[in-house]
Amino acid sequence: MLMWFADGLQNQLCGSCKGLGLQAYASLATFLTSLFGSIPLAYVYGITLGGDLKGIWLGVFTGLFCQFLVYLFILIKKTDWK
Image 1 (cartoon, helix red, strand yellow):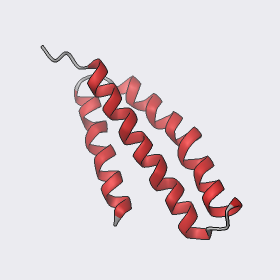
Image 2 (image 1 turned 120 degrees about the vertical axis):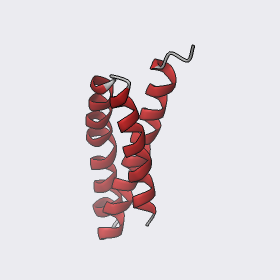
Image 3 (image 1 turned 135 degrees about the horizontal axis):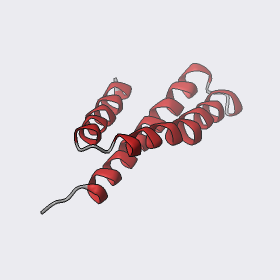
Image 4 (image 1 turned 90 degrees about the horizontal axis):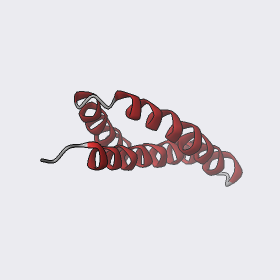
C-alpha cells in the first residue's frame, strides 16, 4: 500500500516534468535513482541484511521516494515561477 503512494507521487511529478519539457532531466533522474538508489538498497535490505522479499521491496520503495524528491527538486529549480 505504501509502495503505491510513493509510485503515485513520483508518477505525478514525472508527468509534470514531461509537461514542462524537462524530459531529459526526468530521464536522467530515473536512471540515476534506479542505478544508485533502488538497486543497491534492494540488495542491501534484501540480501545483506537478510530482509528477503520485504527488504527488496523496501529498497524499491526507498528508491521511488528518492526519485520523488529529485523530481520535486527539478520542478522547483527549473520552473519559471513568474
